[in-house]
Length: 274
Ligand SMILES: Cc1cc2nc3c(=O)[nH]c(=O)nc-3n(C[C@H](O)[C@H](O)[C@H](O)COP(=O)(O)OP(=O)(O)OC[C@H]3O[C@@H](n4cnc5c(N)ncnc54)[C@H](O)[C@@H]3O)c2cc1C
Image (cartoon, rainbow, N blue to C red; front, side, top):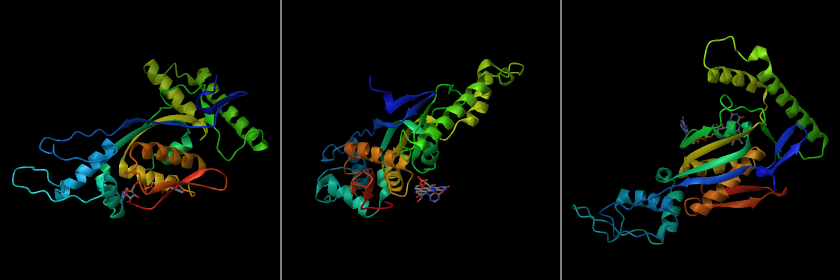
C-alpha cells in the first residue's frame, strides 16, 4: 500500500516528505433578481461574482433593464477574461476580495504554518491543536534541503526521535500527570500536553484549514511561491496556485509556473501587489 502523505517509517519516527493540499470549498454565485438578462462567460462562480461586483460600480451590464430609473452602460468587450485582466492591471484588487476559497493543508511542518499565519489580511485559519490532540505518534516533515541516506538526514532523524522520546516521557511521568491538582480530566490532559509539546521541534507535522479571498491568495502566492521563500512553503505556494488557477483561471491570471535549475517551481506574476 502506498504510504499516505508520502510518509515513511524510519526507525522510531514517521517522516513526511510530501504535503497534501485540497480545495474543500469554493465560491458560489447566485444571480440576483432584476439582473436576469446579464450573461457572462466566466469559467467559475468566483469570477462570476467578482465580475458582477465590479460591474455594479458603473452599472456596466450592457442592455439589461434594471428598472428603477438607472441606465446601464455597455460592458467592456472581451468577456470575463478581459474584464478580470483590467481589474488586475488597474490594481482594483478589492473586487477580488468577494471570492473565497478554502483549502485543507496536511503534511506540513509547524514552521511552515508559523509563516503561513503571518498573512493577516483576508484569511481565516483553523489549525490542529497540540494542546487537545495527543502527539505521541506525531510525524516529522523532512525539509526539502535534507536528502535521505545522508549524514545530515541521520542527525535530523535522531534529533526528532529524541524530542519525541522527551514528549512521551513528559506525558507518562507521574510527576506531570497533574493528578493532585484541581480540574477535569480534559483540563489536566490539556495542561500535560501543552507542557510536553514545548519539546517538539519545528518539523512536527500539522494540519490546517485556510480560507482566503482571491486578493489574499494572490498575494500569498506572490510572496511565498517565490525564490526568496523557504522551500517548504514555496512548494505549498505552488500547490495552492495550481489548485486555484484550475478553479478560477482568470482570477489567478497573469501568473505562471517557472522551473528553477534544481527542478523545483516558482510562480511568476505579471501583476504585482494587486
Ligand atoms: C521571503 C520572506 C522572508 C521573510 N522573513 C521574515 C523574517 O525574517 N521575520 C519576520 O518577522 N517576518 C518575515 N517574513 C514575513 C513578512 O514580513 C510578512 O509578515 C508576511 O510575508 C506577510 O506579508 P504581508 O504583511 O504582506 O501579508 P498580509 O498580512 O496578508 O497583508 C497583505 C497586505 O495587506 C496590507 N496590510 C495588511 N495589514 C496591514 C496593516 N496593518 N497596515 C497596513 N497595510 C496592511 C499590506 O499591503 C500587505 O502587504 C518574511 C516573508 C517572506 C516572504
